[in-house]
Image 1 (cartoon, rainbow, N blue to C red):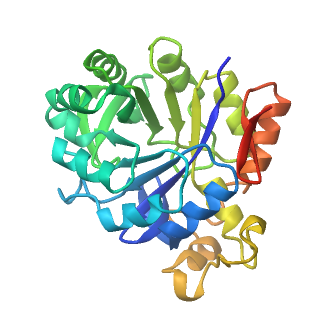
Image 2 (cartoon, rainbow, N blue to C red; image 1 turned 180 degrees about the horizontal axis):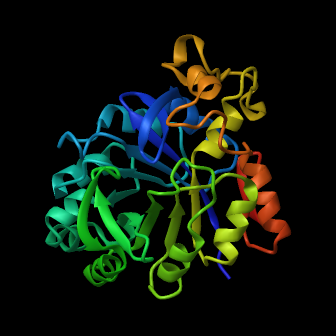
Length: 305
């Protein structure tokens, strides 16, 4: 039995962590390196850095921001967004990343994945699959950070990228992303129980109980989340204890570009916070109580529980 990894996802626009609903309506929550340091200190197993606009604008990921985030971490960092060439991969790894996640660039050129695996090894190459559920129960692969339909069946694509040699799959439900309605457990289970690579479940975490559901019922190897963690550590007046008050994470004031209005007045018909904020430790404690293997970090050292 292997450990279930908890992986906060940092959706990045410019130097900031942003959050929206179904990949839209971004609101700034704070700086990327600030959240990275907090999540490392609070016991994250890995961190995902997702550039939200690089693929859409056909530009490279901001390497300076990657470097600032990587300096705060002593855990694996996966960078996604704008990865189109092996030169992009080399530059991102030199900036401090351990892995890259590729979606749009691979759809445009599937041979790129095979070339990347050959040059850097399967352990370095993650396939990012952003999937939209159709009413008939099928899943369509979308690209450009959940903006562009492709007409490609997401599961068939997953089988193809496994054949091309990727080391794991980051599977995101576009429909659940930012909604707080829980992971698409059925979708995750279909991928995780039939494919021979680890599956990182993304999109929809609304409470710590959702981590248990997708790990137990969905057989996910790792769970990634953003809102449930961001809003815990970004509550007004909250200070991350392990950082001894070095950062005060605030909604509003100098760090924000509308998040207070988002919470008070709503966005896209939503009029309240959609998640029940939780800390990484709380999430892992609930998972441990459900007899799932996790790692608990204490004083910078992680132990099996």
